[in-house]
Image (cartoon, rainbow, N blue to C red; front, side, top):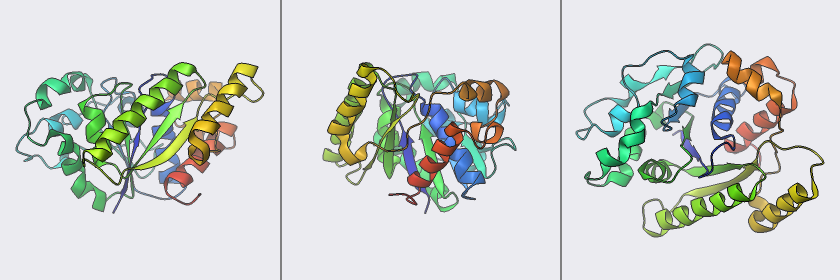
Length: 261
């Protein structure tokens, strides 16, 4: 059965989508795993990158709002472009921005995504869920459907506060019985610059004290290669395979699959 991991943080701009698409690249190309990216962000950046901007007929919104569950989730999947080997995507679009209205009257609405992903878990080795920088019904559904969750963060106090919001939500999800076995896979630092200011080093120390072994030792460097990859709609792991960013995401993808402890 495939492992389902949510990548989330309430703060935007911390590298959630980059973490998803680069981890998917290394899982598919390096580890030879079948990987599915579930894009639940109305901005649909992961979808755009993985499909090269191709249009799709069905997506995450259509499955989530299908009250009868008559639509097979397989019909909504789209193969990623050739740069992402062994990767498919469940596409997002801007309609997800109104998902709260569509789900508010649904019975057992917190487990809709879990039901959608259940048949897909037998086909994919790894399912990564990309979420918007907010806490809403999509967040709860993702956590309910996941085996674990990973929180990317930049080195700012705003992001540190956002991590606590996520942790509070997770505690509710677990205590309310929505997903009592949800695993905290850790916090991963993105946009990391070696050296850094005294304030940055203090934030690293603070995160270490707060999350201890859950602060993942792999740190994603700040690099112009990420922007270059986005412009070319290619993974960093392809355009700069021996670069620091690629090496870091390669290690992170192995950690997500439990090959690194």
